[in-house]
Image (cartoon, rainbow, N blue to C red; front, side, top):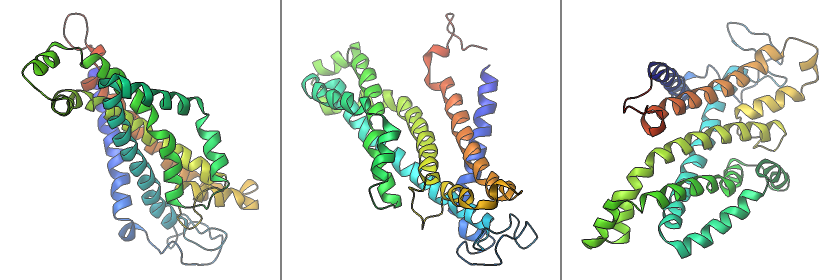
Length: 279
């Protein structure tokens, strides 16, 4: 069982590494300028491996540059959400009065349907990458804050925390030195979960036409493909719609495999009653 987790983790890490390399070195990997126009609706050939779209852009180049946009949005949202959620979760779990106020805000935000509200707001604001990031951040910090708070409530009752207080340890020192390191595993898992959600949500918004039309993400490639009338009556979907869809699927699978493998280290429930890890 554990070996299976390690194998899945290695596969997931390999998938993510490939996509990160493509995103970082997109200008060197893309065969053409994604904004350059060629003959429209060309079939795949040696010049255009995935053909061209209805206005003559090279589809492979759009997908390569789309990797950079999609991963950038997921990374920025996940990092900021974890920073905000972890900070508020630490404070809410350690200080009862402030924590009560923070958790009431969290409760209110969590009761709001996340994706429908994002769709409604996105339809009334100017489409851009930064506006999408801001929309995702409205909700991205709440679940990490709640989960981190629950763990802090448990950790602050440990004997070593009481001992640190008795020898004069400050609250900030306890939070930074003793509690934060113990919640890092939860933060990592939440980071992966948020990245998966953002990639799927961003693709969905772009598919609905609510993304940035200038920044060609995987979702925007999907959007323009489905706007083409002949996509339903020809084999164009095989090289225009299928590749970005596979990129989304493999990225989510890579993140899922890595998160599944991390449970081996982070989740104590994987240990059997006799003290060893399950096999």
